[in-house]
Length: 519
Image (cartoon, rainbow, N blue to C red; front, side):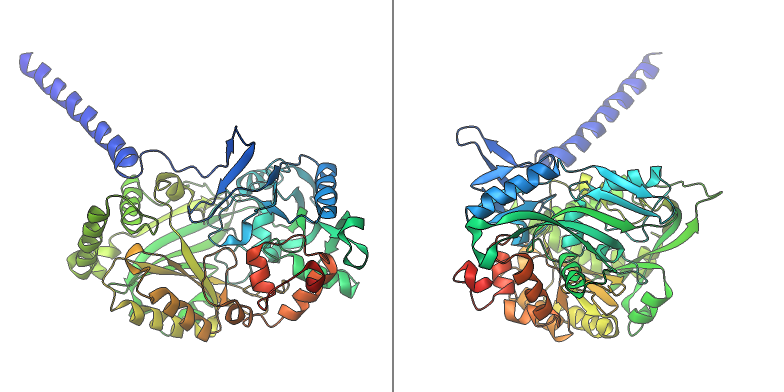
């Protein structure tokens, strides 16, 4: 009995030690507390301070409002528009660029989160723009609805997903804008640009509007990065709910070199991550399955150890890192050297094949990664390259990384052409999005400017919500319908009310000296 008691005690002590070490690993070493980018209220000044998820944008608006109804939204826009104030709506702040920065009047949209209606016959659903995507997906499921492609996060708001042309990985569909049938936008109209006489108006815009002017307004509004007005509601085209067979496996880059467009066309949904140190790719392929008689058995293909490994690498590579720099560099060197040896071999990686049947709501999500790695947020740039030039872009990116011995990767996400959206990165052409995370050891090497240059040379169009630093003139030149967007901007927002420094720099690279000049 004595030895039994000793063994039980030792087992108990080991269990407690493992639990404690897990707590230290998750909570102490990598950030202390869960990263929280919720706005903070200063009780002394009554002002809110906002930070984006990546931690690289922070702002304290002069005034912050949280309208809970359309009437409150219209009143706020009328009052502040007449006063000549700049108005900006903010949502989940999952934007790395300054597109959502509101320094004057900030409209928090989180209270405008209702499902307004749905049409079972037409398979459409209408919801307020402040609803989070996870709540919208749940509402769709309850009504036997789904959409064919979702972004890899579901904590952003619907209005932001539309305005920033957020995308999934479906080559037969475009960005989230491609599902929009109609939307309602609050604009500020004023006679001859005289803001003091202006008034907020709710404008309904439809994809199939017979009025050319309203049709142009629709094309501008679905990918406007919030620079035309405030999206109040969105009507989306849905389909029957489905399940997805999802499989992940690894292979060398040579397996897909010269075939990226072909692979994109062949698969319903493809996601490919490319390790720049060893050229090992990891793919995630989705195949839709009718949900009748199919048992959904997974919500995530990653194990806890997978997530912890990802967390270590993100922590080591965090571009905003200010602590533990020696340990971070040592980890980077270790992972880089390991990737070149046996641990980085194709055979080793191929053992990591994973598969499962998942709901349409889970198949694309990285929510569990975000939950576990929340203390190590990352920042990235992203460009949409025409599919026929994706191989060229991928080869150049790999070559560029060869002289920089750090553990990093880039992701390729094929996305179909959008039929609407003057400033949609996929407007009129099937594309491959190149998603590249910023690594702190590369920030001062000039490599990211070189990446943007080569992606622009491959006709890449930037993602408005991602951090890009190329000159505005070069970025906007990739959008041939920029003049049509600018015309819609002048008509919908004649006083340039819904703007900030970011949108002015993009839309008026020559500079805006007054609201009248913008009009």
